[in-house]
Image (cartoon, rainbow, N blue to C red; front, side):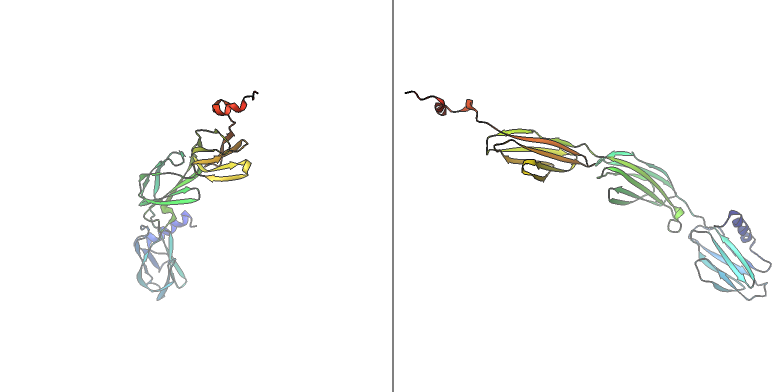
Amino acid sequence: MISEATRDELRDFAQAGRLGSAVYIWCDDSCPDAGEEIYVQWDFSASAEEVGVLQIPGLDCITVPSVGRHKIRIGGETITISLAVGDQLCETLVEPRVIIPRIIGFRCSNRVDMGVPLRLAWSTVDAESCVLFVRDGERLVERVLGPAGDIQISFNNAGPQDVQLKAFGRHSHLSEEAVAVEVVSITVVPPPVVIEVPEKVKSAFIDEEVCFEWNVAGASCVRLEAPVRSEVYPVSLAGHLQVQAGAEEERFRLVATGFNGTEHTVKLRLIPRLFDLHHVPDELRLLNVLWEE
């Protein structure tokens, strides 16, 4: 890391165009925009040496004559260019100007219901483009956007989710400083689990079939448990169960799992119906009359 005092000193040398009594090296622009081309020039014709060695960071050493210039393209980092002539070393400092973007507005609600659209708005300064990264559970969605605007997103997973905005300046390919980043954390609230069962208790004569119907909302999955039968069935959110009545009462459990992992249960009962004497036909009532001689 070059200290500010050293930079000031080297900058003074660069502006003066020399270091030592017989060796000169300078740039036509010591503070160019990053990515621009500049000329490095030198003159050591007053020296007894006929050739020198020009050292530019990122390039091989170059043997140069006593007077000349060399064109280079500047990146995004400060560099020191040196010229070695005999036992003398002359240096010049190049400090490129990097345009640093800023995110001045990145607004959204920090809480949203799952599946409900959420509006994001952003604005930047000195950015040419933006990229939005939306984490939704294990899925990462990337969208290329302009330097300002708004967009609607929705989440399919509950819990904390991160949304990251990156703003890229014109020099982002040359320097990490030319990329601004802002992250917001959003809490995604799962919808409530609602289980609708028109009739939870049904009765039927033995061997007669009945149908339980249900409609479930806000659940990731639903299962039907039949403890008497020691069976478990995965079922749809909107479904039905066709079952035959036996001699004993049978119970079932409809279990809905919410998006946050909680389980909600509704119990179903099938009660066998006894024979009702009030509805016995008159012909059959004779069976209950004592025979008289």
